Image (tube, rainbow, N blue to C red):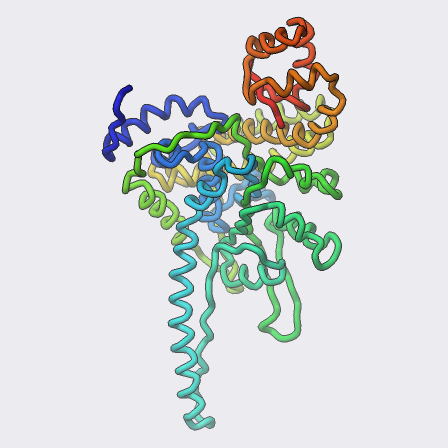
Amino acid sequence: MKEKNITAEGIIQEALEYNAKLTDSFFPIEIFPDKIKEIITTTNLCLNFPVDYISASLFFAISIGIGNTHVVRVKETWEERCILYIALIGRPGSNKSHPLSFAIQPFFENDTAEAIKFKQLYKKYEELNKILKKTNEEQDIITPQEPIQKKIIVSDITPESLAFIHENNKKSICLYVDELASWFKNFNRYSKGSEEQFWLSRYSGSPIILDRRGAKNTISIQHSFIGVIGTIQQGIIKDLARGDRTQNGFLDRILFVIPNKIKKQYWNKLQLPQHIAPMWNNILSILINLEYATDPNGEIVPIVLSYSTEAEATLIDWQHKNVDLCEFENNETMLGIYKKMETYISRFSLLIQMMRWVCDESDKKQIDQISILKAIELVKYFCNTAQKVQAIILSTSATEELSSIQKVICQNLPNTFTTAEGISIAQTYEMPERTFKEFLKNNVNTIFSKDKHGLYSKIN
């Protein structure tokens, strides 16, 4: 067996070579600049981070870093912000949480630094107030302004409390929920449907206005920016479809991340090269510290990016094909997802352009052809995963309807298999090749997913 080179240079070289293998990964990592691809490949190689999970987590973190500072103009009166709702789906122990923690760690560190700074400023504020109270009240003394604490990351929180935090940081807020199932369960904890409606509105970046007694309790945010990310176990994914979520468009707003297959990996002696975490921290720090203008009301005035002539033509061509796709789609849920992708493709293109800019691979004067083409590849991925989620939701009833021999064959098929492998297993139980192929064909998107020609995966 060839001895692995476990020096930093050796790991980087191996990661670069490994990149060729990762191009076969379900998630299209070619959308990323070279710096971020290096982060993906090395964390996968050294820390066993599944490519789909780390890729989606990094992508999401960049969207939070951008926030309200930049928008893309689709039409004269139509602008999009890169707000994302992402769910990382997998079985228990599939290593979902660690990639997500790695991606948002710079935000935690930023919030910790802000909390320390706030405590110091508040202490000075209280001391100054004590001094002013001892002075002659008749003197014209300016009362010091109370400091505010800025946060990016929030977790288990009510919409009202979230609004107060967002007012102190109008750039962006990240709702990080390690188990998204708890997020859904909390939707009706106070009044039926109100919290779900809140999140339906936040997807569009709509205003938040809360009027309470006293000026200090009045909240006004013209453009909200709250991204949501978390994990959910594949076994309880059916909870997503409960209530009216398949009818009110809530599920259409969620981008699902499901790896093609995850094999339990052996630990190795490879250590993450020392420059990888600082490189990621530097990328996010540039975005966190982006300067922006504000209007007289303290609202952020974003920089507006339009499409280049070539990129706009490509976008319109894609939209025409998407409309044609909708015309032939009979599944109402998938139809809603295809329609929502017309919103997400603009958000993706803005995010990718900014991602390339922060990694010194482009400017940010406009959305160019490269960014829109990469956005189209990402749309394909999320349409595919949406189909997988629908298949998971429908899979239980489909399995119950199988004959006893079909159930046995399903149990003995590996999680991922080729047509030839499936035929071989079926024949051991005396099912003819033609019958197995028909069985396979009839149960794609309910029991099996077709990963590519001749390659299938079991959905559950």
